Length: 334
Ligand SMILES: NC(=O)c1ccc[n+]([C@@H]2O[C@H](COP(=O)([O-])OP(=O)(O)OC[C@H]3O[C@@H](n4cnc5c(N)ncnc54)[C@H](O)[C@@H]3O)[C@@H](O)[C@H]2O)c1
Image (cartoon, rainbow, N blue to C red; front, top):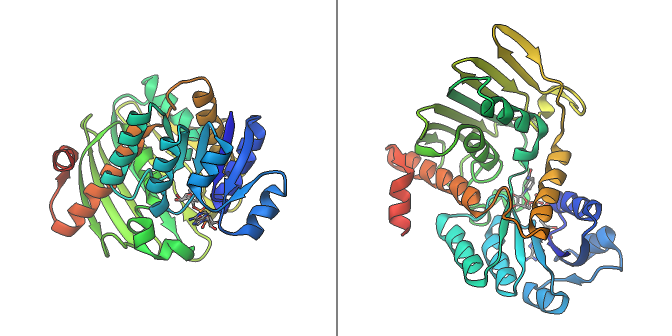
């Protein structure tokens, strides 16, 4: 397939590596920073600064979008209108209206959209999902996820109008889609935050449709260099914990075992390993493979929208002090 890549910043560099490794053809990049673009792709690949011109001139099959959040909807819609499929970095959009605009454009033009929820491809997380699917943990009763970070990244992430919120809408989205990947659909959310929609700290209590409960707790207030995103699961027949995908807190964990489970009384390490970069490249390659075979991506518009719905419910809960049910949001959106 012919792939165009938009944004060559932190995550765009890993998507670039994945596209090159996938064997698909990189036909164009969209990047305002020309020096960065030339350093990244040399003179072989056309560099554009305007999406409509890029898709008209290079006719990509897929447009891969690694841009700040406020650009996800306009760039995705322009790509879909030009007849391309889309791969979008998280979050799908800054709000539910944005998600619905993308869904309508994809439907109108008969195109597919994949969302890079890369942590779904972190191998210890997939192994944990296998333990759940094979009923080895029994019935899932509780999921606890944390996101302890320190040192803000700066740039557009400091501007809530470009993020669509604060920490929850940025790195917190990984916690939200992982909760649903492991626990199934969320039906209601109760949240407390320091400043909803530009938050540095949050606690979400989740009620899953299955009857399980969950807690996601995150904050920027750790020392510099911290990114601790571990997950604990309590099941009726066992328990499991995964050291985070990006757990810098513990030093460099590349190649280390990350998943421990207690099944039948004994805690033991699972032999599966993985790291963050690999989860991103696996996520990009899996989506491109699905699209090249004409399949719906494993993580698509429904999963992308579901994650944004939980974030929106959390904001409304923190603003009103009430529990917000996801079905109420959908009624208001329709
Ligand atoms: N999956 C992950 O773990 C992960 C990690 C980091 C970022 N992300 C996501 O990836 C996306 C990008 O984040 P990032 O950290 O790579 O950002 P970044 O700031 O490092 O890179 C963004 C790039 O986009 C370019 N750009 C900005 N506006 C543009 C425009 N109008 N046209 C063309 N180029 C433009 C910038 O010059 C920059 O090079 C966001 O959606 C973010 O949430 C995901």
